[in-house]
Amino acid sequence: MARRPPTPNARRRVKRDPAAPYPYARKEEGAEGFDPRLRVHAEFLLSAPSLAETPPDTGREVAFAGRSNAGKSSVLNRLTGQKSLARTGRTPGRTQALNFFRAGDERFLVDLPGYGYAKTDRQLQADWQAHVEAYLAQRQALVGVVLVMDIRHPFQAFDRQLLRWAGQAALPVLVLLNKADKLGHEAQLEVARAAEAETAAYPTVIPVLFSALRGQGAVPVLRALREWLNLPLPDDGPAPEA
Image (cartoon, rainbow, N blue to C red; front, side):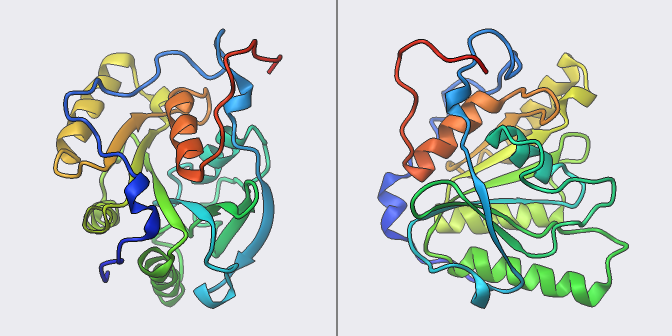
C-alpha cells in the first residue's frame, strides 16, 4: 500500500505516551456513571462500491476496518447506541462496500468491507481489498481508524499490514480487541499485554479491550472518536437516563 501523505489534520494527532496506563474499562458501558451523551449518533448516508462513488473528500472521517466476523458492525452499533445502524448477521463478509454514516456536519463513520473471508469469491475479495486500500491511501478526510479484531484471533496478516501503513502515515489507530466477554479476566490481560508488545513500535496505535455485547471499553473509544471528529464532549452536568 502506498504511503498516504500527511493531511492538515496531522497536527491535531496526539501520540501515545508509552508510560501511560493500559486504557481498558473494567466497567461495562451500562454500569453506573456511564454518560449516554458520549455516544456518537449517526445515520446511514450511502454505500459506495468504489472510491469514485464516495462523498466529497472533505470534513472528517473515521474508518472501521477488520477481518470478517470480528464483529465490526456490532461495534458500530454499540458506539452509536443504535441496534441496527450497521447490519449484522451470522454470515461473515456482509459488508461489501464502503458504507458511510453521517455523524454530524461533514463528519462520517465509514464501515469498510471485511477482509479474509475464505468462502468469498477470490476475485470479488481482491476487488474489495483494492477499494479498501485505495480509500485508506487516498482519502484526505480520514483522521483515524478503528481496527476491530476478535480477541481470540488477533493480529492477522492484514491487521499487521494496516498497522504498518498507519505507522508510516502517522494516522491514529484504535485496535479493539473485541469479544473480550469470551475470555476470563486473566486471559484478557494476557492478550492485552501481548497487544501492547505487538503495537509498541507504533506510537499512534492504542489497543483497547472491548466487548460490543457488554460495552466494555466503550468509554475510552467514544472519547477518542469525539476527539478525532472534533465533536464536543458532554459537560460536567448530570447525565440523563440512558
